[in-house]
Amino acid sequence: MADPGHGVVVFGRLESPLEVLSRENWWERACFQKFSDPVYGDLTLQMPVWRMTGAPPRVRWACRPPGYHNGYVYQKYLGWGPSHLAPLRSQGVILSDSNSFDHNAKLYLCHSSTHRRSR
Figure 1 (cartoon, rainbow, N blue to C red):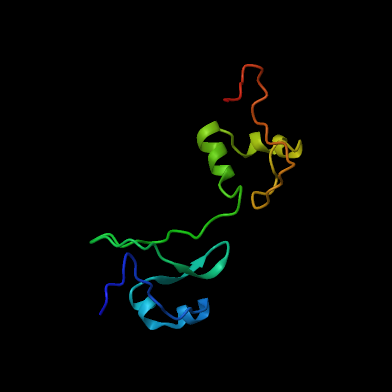
Figure 2: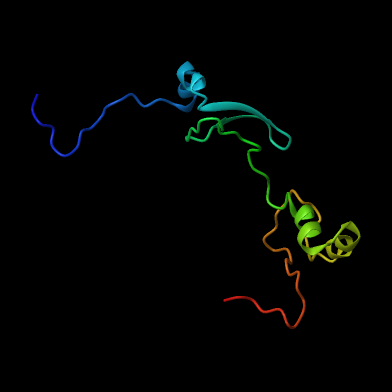
């Protein structure tokens, strides 16, 4: 066989996502996992591609909508509980629904004259 040169083109059939998911070898190699998420329901996810001995990759959750963890962040980092957040929500300073995201909402949490934006 002649020298192919600097590169070799490997030909293969292009499969649709449904065809790929129907191939048993991908499931045996744990490339995909069926997952039940409390927000999105039943999902089929691609697993991380790396493999480590003794510590197999896992998926804790698929993703969360914008604002899903806001209550936790407000409490942990600012010390703001529900009683502090209620007036801010009613004034439109923060979103009232943690599962929605509005680019026009007022997201200004610091009204102090000493607060400076970093440049």
